[in-house]
Length: 298
Image (cartoon, rainbow, N blue to C red; front, top):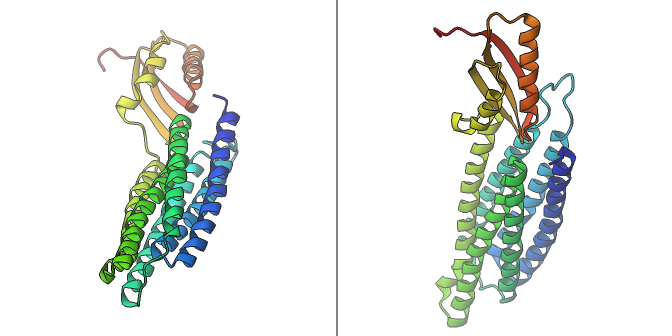
């Protein structure tokens, strides 16, 4: 896949997420206030946070597609991981705020929300689940941390909407049957939503930070890279191979052994041949090859 095509598809997904989240946040907020549903208002705030998340992903993708330069010889791929960390932090802050607001509702007089709140939540669940499936599939296809984290933002909104639906439905039933304690199911749902959002932000943030700290592929993930190097017949042995993740691509640091009787120029040619083979792979951005003299005893 062409790199430009990759970024166009990823950027389109990020922009689509921004537009849909803005629309959902406005609809849920207006209906939540009108219907008197704290759970729906909390869910609207969650959708609003997704706007910031999708925008951060968009900026990260724009930065990541810049070519290597003097100050960034390894490229800008980690911008995607940084964007993913920003999204995780936004989710954490939103989760804490939702929990605080919902908890305070237990100490105030409360009424069951209006039935229209249920319709808004159901629409939100359908739309956000569709966005999750679309972005998760695309993120895996394009190997984009930012898109995958953004996809799980949508999935967290699905979970929070389901919790809101249960809370709103229980509160409405309690209001109609005169079971007043059941009316508190609405703010209870808000607290549940906040816990779910905080948990998801922690999991996603931890993974994104791990990828940003010069994480190298595990040995089982470098099998294809090793097989590619071994197709060059002059390579006697792979002494060391590290593939560092930089967002959607990897930088390969490689040490190979060649015939010790080769000239420097011949060894250089082997190194160039190995580098060329690896650069033909879709996920390899750059390769650094060190040539060692082959020694059978070692």
